[in-house]
Every structure is written in C-alpha cells, then in structure tokens.
Length: 511
Image 1 (spheres, rainbow, N blue to C red):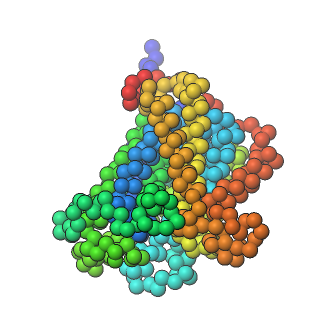
Image 2: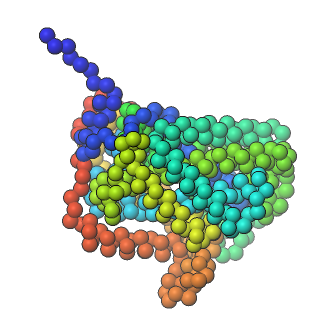
Image 3: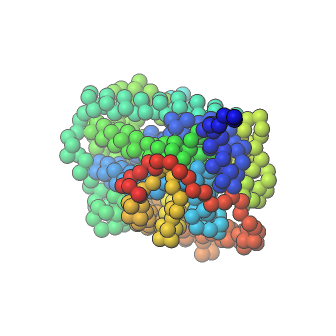
C-alpha cells in the first residue's frame, strides 16, 4: 500500500505559480519579514522626510504635519486593495500583472508602461538624495559634479547587489530596516524628552503660509503643496506583491507584509514628524532653512547627533534605492517574460547561478541614471516620479473597481476584503483622482513649465510652456501608444487566470 505524500510549501507555491502561467525561475527564499522589509525600505520614511521636509515646512508651516495622516489613510485604502490582489496574484510585476488579469492585456500594458517610467524616475530621485546626507558627514563639497558622481556610484553598487541575488538583497534590507526603525524611534523619543520646545498647539499653526499668493484661496492651496512631502514617502508598498515569486507562501505573506509596511510607516512617520516639529526653537528660521531636519536635531541635541542622524538617513536612502531598483527589475522581467518590451528575450533571461535577471538589472541602472546627466532639480524629479506612480495606482484601482462590478473575485484567496471590498475600492479611486488633480496643479515647485525645468528647451514651440507632469504623461502615452499599436496589439499574452483555491480566508469584514 502506497503512503500518501504531503506537498511541501515550496511545491504548493510553485504549483500556484504554474496555474498563473509561469514556471519557477526566481529563487523563492524570502520569509514574511524579508518581504515586509523590502516594502518598508521602498517607502522609507527617513528618506522621504529628509528629502522634502523643507518643502513641507516652508510652504505649510508646522500645520503641514496633518498631511501625514491624511496621505497615510488614503494610501492605506489603496494598500488594502493591493493586498487582496497580491493574495490572488503573487507574481513579479505587481500592478502590471494585477491590472492585466482583472482587466485586459491592453490595460495591463499601459499601466505597466506608466509604472515602469515612474519607477525608473524614482531611482533617479532617491539616488540624487544620497549626496545631500553624505556630503556634510565627510565634508565633501556639494557641487553638481560631486552630486552626480555619488548618485551614479550608489546606482552601480545597488545594481551589483541586486545582481548578487535575492538572498543578499534580503539580508541588507533586513539590516537597513532595523537600523531605520530603531534610528527613527530613538531620535523621536530623545527629541520628545529633551528637545521639546513647542506645545501641541503648534500643530495647527500655519505660520503665515495661509497668505502665500498664487497657491489658492486661504490655506488649502498651500497645504496641498506642503502635502507633497507625505505623498513622496508613502508609496512602493506593492513591492511586497512584486516579490511574490521569491516569497514563501506569498498568498498569505505578501498581503501581511504589504499592509504592515504601510501601517508601521504611518506610525513611525507620525511619531518622528511630531517630535521634530515640537523640537523647533525658531519656527521662521527653520522654515527658511535649506536643511531644516538636521538643523532641528543639531539645535536640540548638538552637532554630533546631527551627523549620526545623517548617517542613519544615508543608510535608509541606500537601502531604499536598493529596494526601488529591485522592484524595477521585477517589473522589467515580468513585462519581458510576457514579451511586452523591446528586446524582451534579453531582459527576461534569468541567470541560473544567482537566480536574477542580470540584463534587467543593468538596463534599470542605465535608464535610472540618465536623468542625472540632464537635470539636477530633485524636487521636479521627485514630484514627477510620484505623480506618475499615483497615476498608475489610480488606474489599477479603476480597472479593479470595474472587475468588482463584474463579479471579481470569483475564487477564494487567503486575504479578502469581503463585503467591504467595493466601498474601499471606491474610496481608493476617489482618493487617487483627488491627488492627481493636486499633481496636475501648475506650480513652480512641483509642476513647473518645461521652460523652467529645462531652460535650454524653453523656446520649443508649444512645449516650452507646458507643465512637466502633463507633458510627461503625454510623452509616455504617445510613445506607448505607438509601440502598442505597432507591436503589441496582436501579441498573445502569457499566463492564465487564477484557479480556485481552498483554505480559510484571512478576512476583513467576512465574505
């Protein structure tokens, strides 16, 4: 009599991946914490707050603090929908794969195309942030040439580490996330205990920014501008789903990691921003400073602590860059595996020794580095990348809403929103659309005209006065549309819909 065998988790994961149309090529070694660490380091509270705290405090005053919980709650709505999608389709490429499976190949391709452009531009923005923290520590001159050299060196190093394999990636991310969480907590607690100079009433103080001309009636316009710091921080959590093919039991692990990354970022960010704002000694001085966060910490704790803070942020920025490139590599690999990019065979090739698509890693590095040579305006690059990310997220939620109206999901998955799914989806779409209006608002700081961002192109007819965000969308849409019509429209797509799964669902609100 034969003895029945029990499938291992690895066999179950590989079988589910086959049901989605793919064989197991990437190395599946990540646990739930490592998956969470990649998503959390992509969000990277310390990176985003350091990069754009000056924008927030100078345009919204201390009251800009409230942009953080508003953006965090809005993005949590998005994350809940993405967690459900990740539970059904834990496949490399995240929203590209999700949208094409719940909608159509065309929807998936265009959303993936925009998301790819945004992710590559995010590599540029984060790499260009690193010189701002390293230069003061080592006493380097903060010249344009040095900034570009440091950023390029960082991209080269993260590329080598991503090529080395997901195990190396996870080890570095785990260490970096631990350092960031501990560092942010320690600085927040120390500032609250010994650096407290303001009362809680300062959190409703716009410090005169409500009278800023040209940004809208009253304080609303300036607050929406100040919100860009928070908008720049809280995204990238879908990376937990994009690493699903490399995660053990991803249908359960990916949703938990994704939501944990958002919730912990919400808490850590709120605590740190609260502590930093309460530690301000001279509000007008900090609002006019080019380096407000280091100034706050140095003013409260001394210059030594200021350098330690910069060191913690430098680690976080580097690990953030590592995670963003990892997400970009998976997206290029996933779209190429479906033959959705030029030279797809090259980008989809996985090296059997290290288990990573080496060519995809190299091409993300090259394209991510190119904007550094053209422009060093980090604010414009960061806001442009963020706007395109929110566009891709909102488009994904729109096609998901349509799918829900048509009866999705028809199969069970370990994580489900149950009867709350439709409401959460509608709210996520409304949130995304409202923020797209904010991104499209013509402003010199976040959405300047082409002539302001690139003076050499200012005299180009028609385009010279076009806002950068809308122009970026138009360029990507035109190029993508031509490529789709010429090459992709008649191609079949790899992969298949998810098959029904059994098991006890991890539910919010019941079935």
